[in-house]
Length: 376
Image 1 (cartoon, one colour):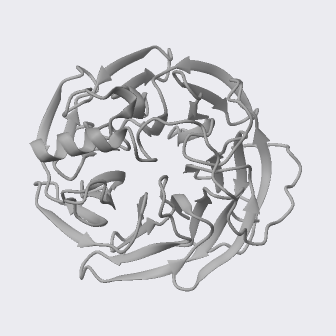
Image 2 (spheres, rainbow, N blue to C red; image 1 turned 90 degrees about the vertical axis):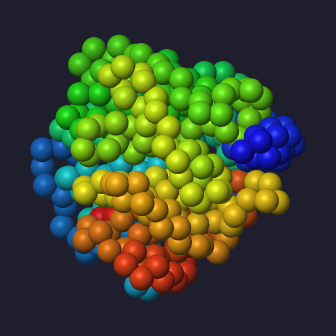
């Protein structure tokens, strides 16, 4: 444990990645073919989705090193890319078939049936010139409330604390702005939809927002402490809400799982086994937690992996090849899709498909440095 803390704090000031850094843009990568955005009008959320050809089980990924999202056939690869705005990060999918995509330029609305962008909603907060790269300003974590009425998007404001902007999905406008911590990586809904949880990467914290009042309360989540400040690697990234009790699960370094009670702010620590820097998470209805290990940040760390943790705490660690960032699970719970669009150096243009029963993996081409992912 001492080895990891010392090594990580030393590297945190020198390596590009999760540690705070200058807002440098990333060089453009090759883009897939795109379509011209449609009219900016926002459809009525009460109406059913438009007819189209996107079948259930297809994937939608955010092309972080481009300005598109890509529809992906999980057996064959990319089907079509749609322009949404520069450096798309996260995706929230509604029951009406609309996908809400956080980008450096605003929140894009995509009709997944017709595969068109129907709107781009600008942020109310000044975030600087839209750029590529990990530290670019603009939207990061994003969640759609269970009733479909509001989108909550974490907005990174370079060199200062971020905000959460609340979008009314009927009018397509920003209705509220709430201050949170630095670099709001992830946004999640509570089980009952009454609260929203914002994971503030560079502030070592989680902000809990009541949906009815928007009143925030913030809790520190720092199982390794906060030494090193924004330059530390030992910070929260993504979270998952445990179905059994509503606790927030935040993995750290393949060693510690921070369990936050969002009512009290109490944090307990459970052991983990992957021994690797960890980012994306998702959880199945039965409480199985999946966590992406992004690979080494010191020479002693393990390679990239996917941890599959049962509700009782038993873990299987499935090795992956190359950098990865986020994960989604098929509706039947049998297959995981792990995106290769890493926020640090080493991203690649595809996803790894994981058979969760056997642990077998295969690589699938999918967009341009895909980051966020949803199953349609």
